[in-house]
Length: 227
Image: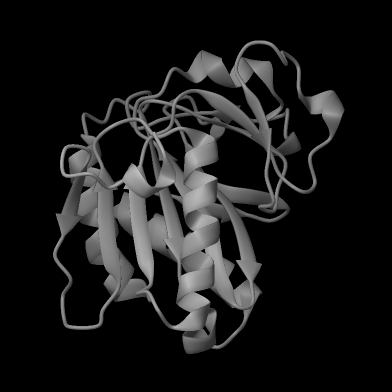
């Protein structure tokens, strides 16, 4: 699907803005090709910087891919032929995207939010933690480990949400992801975020019967409470 057609009437729903001039929310109903998403974000960042477009939060799912951030170590790519592998300009290392994982791309003007990248990442963490709390899930930060972590029923720490951002001329893109019900064995082809001592989990793996649409509603509610 070409970037200009990503938001056709058949493939997207609009979440109404809360007030004129507010952030535009879009939810894609079809799986989005990773390169198309990157092209779209690149264009949107330029438009926002020029003042010709609103900020946007885009909720979507990708076809199964591995992506390599700016700090990726090639040794952490264990199965290069399992899924397509894309180099990307976001921060971080290798991660997996695929069906059952809610990806949220945020194209925001950080000039309106203090022009502080570290503070922005902290806000993203806070937002994910608040979203999980809507479902009585305790998400936590861990020193030296990017993302949001939970403790499962066997007292094992596992990652449930990832963060990877890029900022150009103070406009953010890329964003966060929450594992709702992806195939967790798809992570076996990489060392996720360069961390091998801890596992990956999902809402389904935690015995939480939560739909992607429920996650979307919680994400929007807690976004405005957080930001």
